[in-house]
Image (tube, rainbow, N blue to C red; front, side):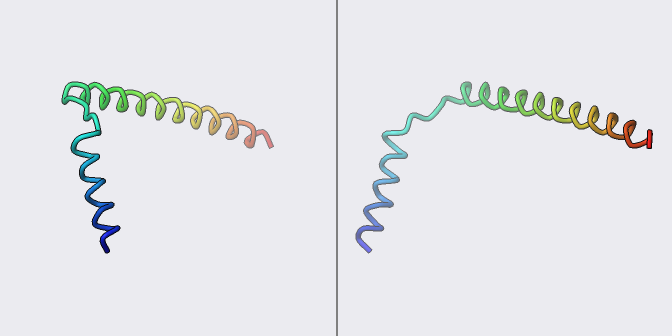
Length: 63
């Protein structure tokens, strides 16, 4: 049980003193960047889906 307690205490110590946490402004910038990147990715995937759906619909309607 002492090993588990020491492990948890080491985790807490590392999180408090050794991890460099971003400032609020850095966090906001990163969040906006992730949001914009995710939206761009969703738009690209949606456009590819639309093109493939249209092309395959046209192709299958020929038969």
